[in-house]
Image (cartoon, rainbow, N blue to C red):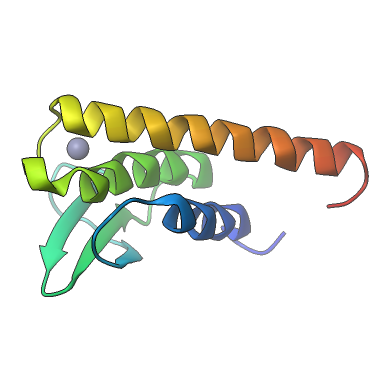
Length: 110
Ligand SMILES: [Zn+2]
């Protein structure tokens, strides 16, 4: 399997269901600070940075976390109630996507 193929599939799906007011760009990069990811408001879009040294599975976890920041940005960059609601919504959608994906694998469609 192509490197991080599933991560990029997750990214495509999560962007499609995001409620963000602005487009989201995602970059896997070296993060010097003691963090796994960031969501930064730029002029007309959100830039999400994810530590490129993380595993694919961990990267998807961080992606969910950071897109929830974009979706709840009116509240600012924190983990308040709006963020928690946004995260829960994305997480539920992602779980449904995974169930569907696994079913397709079982049916030989993937
Ligand atoms: Zn956060």
